Length: 483
Image (cartoon, rainbow, N blue to C red; front, side, top):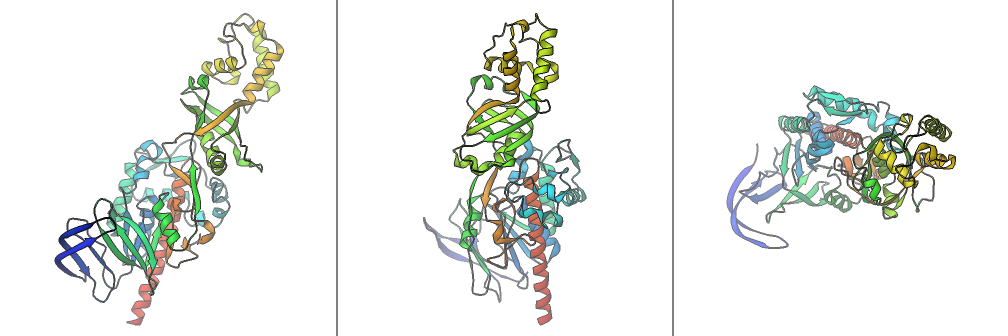
């Protein structure tokens, strides 16, 4: 490696304090203007051979690490450095309850796959998933030693049921390819030099530390953090204001809270918001639902929260939720089932005898009777036809008042970021700055639960890495031709 190492004493100042003189290592690159300075006790600075180009990846998450590996695979002589403020792949580590929902194995058609992205469902129907879709993702991990399984609902997990399998695989591959992952650092500013390089300022929050780097390519894959959005703005991009997505609904209902833990395999739920001016088909969803101590959760609620993310934010997370607990049974048939059960079990108490055809548990049956004002000790013989109709109507059109959002611990997702109109999806390159790329959640793309957000990260990272690698190879060939 061609560089000169000198050790002497410097004083380094920052906006908050001035550190007294201490030993520093300064790296000089002969014939290059790229340099870095850092205390001897810290991690090694970015450096590469004078003839090599440099890619800096902002963010060591799924998109960043995957993109870095791909770039280095395509262009082995490209220097690739990932800057991560925390632990690499920390979101991958905790996702899916610690199992990591890698992707979705049921969405094999790319048009259908795109429909799982509330922000991006129109744009992603193009070449995005054709270049690297769920099958490609599964093939990549399988070929790198991570055995996968597809569950009944389409979610794909490691056979080990441990996210560590995915994390270890990615970190091992990054190391093998020669990707440098530097943690505890933040890229705080980015500008362009007269020569077209990216001038990056890197800081360490825990100590008074500043590092300056010139990069040939910049991939921003910082997830939902402010860091990436700030850099995008500095480089001329606009930002769609981020708001939460994928969350549970808070419902103030003491009786409902007593049902915490009760699950419904299939309900039909429709969200109605006061701010709605147009009919949004996706605000009606069918799927499993779960009662929690604070309200409602489960796939059907999470999908509603994703599609209604901006509308819910505008309405201060207030709305009306209509739930059909027996979506496969017409209301007339529900009443018929109740009437038949009444005639068959005349003397039994209503509370102790719920029609099995409805497929609901006793705890919820008790809740339904209570909301209709029917006493627990009343017999079927005492139930009038109008009361039977009321129960049937309640099962088909149960109303809940949503008055807030809870947290979905398995996935932390935001809606918002760099608009897709400002990048070229076939390369993930900025339309505003050449050599600047984006991937993952920093873009205004987010998916519903089920592995779709990670697939966005894998696809975007792969495409960006491929594009950067190809540019680096072309630049290297051009340089060789000139020498």
